[in-house]
Image (cartoon, rainbow, N blue to C red; front, side, top):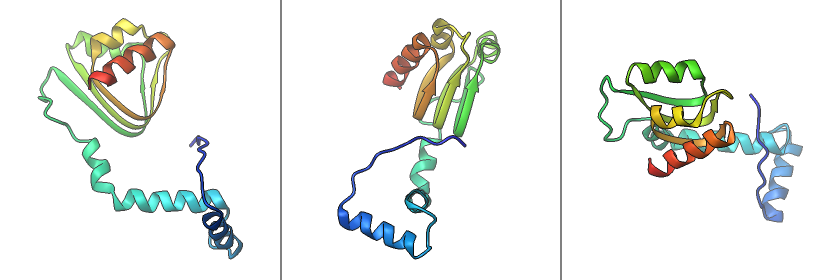
Amino acid sequence: MKTEKVSINLTSTELGQIDYLVERGLYDNRSDLIRSSLRKTFDANKQYLQEFLQPDDVEISTSYKTHFTMGIATFNLESLQYNLNKGQRLHIRIFGILSIGKNVPAELIRQTVATCKVHGKIIAEPEVLKALNEIQERS
């Protein structure tokens, strides 16, 4: 899986402790220790993360289609057009990456996506990204 670079500020003491644990062979490197710590934090707070992936008060019916994902979700012109033709509005929640095909017009996003909450990254053309950001602000 592709990773993203994140910058954090640590005290000299924290960095020294990390380096010592790496030196002792408990972790391969600084990044390994930090990722391990994050995984433990995510496991300890799993209930809160799962809440995000559950429907709110949105009425789930045949006119709505939910798409809740941890990872990567991709929507292309055909899949969005299919939902539009079925009269279904999408409710999207993602931890990870939302990728929208390059040929998807912003107007189709506005017609098909009812709510959108992405904690991570959105890969889309500028006009589509603008439409998704507008939808996220309302969600």
